[in-house]
Image (cartoon, rainbow, N blue to C red; front, side, top):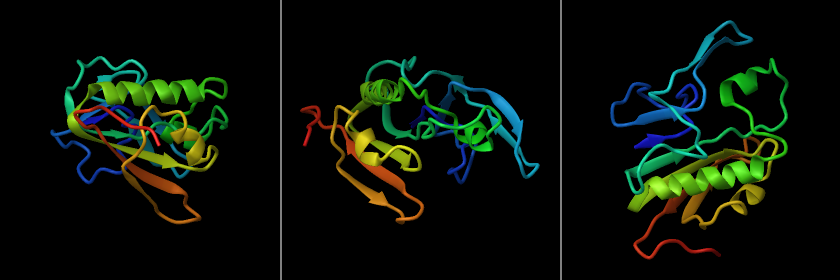
Amino acid sequence: MLDPCCGGRMFYYDKTDPRVLFADIRQEKHILCDGRIFTVSPDTIADFRALPYADETFYLIVFDPPHLKICGPQSWQGKKYGKLSRDTWRDDLAKGFDECWRVLRTNGTLIFKWAETQIPLREILSCFSVSPLFGHTTTHNLKTHWIVFYKTVSGAWRL
């Protein structure tokens, strides 16, 4: 399994699970506003827009890219979740999705996580070359979405 934007591995029960290849463009350590130490320590330093893996390498990918485009340089949310470029976020996310799709095996599953705090989900999905199979919205207030894409032998489809 590949997590190309692992950050602090926050949603993992086992943050050292050997079944997961943790990748991120960052390797950092920060002290958060509540005094906790937050570490981004990937197995591989990689940019999700240009993954260093061969085509069809992984059966499962979880793509949880940064979801903020507006945050200050000392923002604890920016430190925890990373930050998108205000000018290139659409292109960056499209490239990231296409790279994840490229390294996903046929009959593989891509799980996309999006926190809809600054950019609506519909705008994000319009950047992708593939339509999702199904998804889940947690609550109206949290606006966190888990969406599943499945790669078939015939490729992908758009709605």
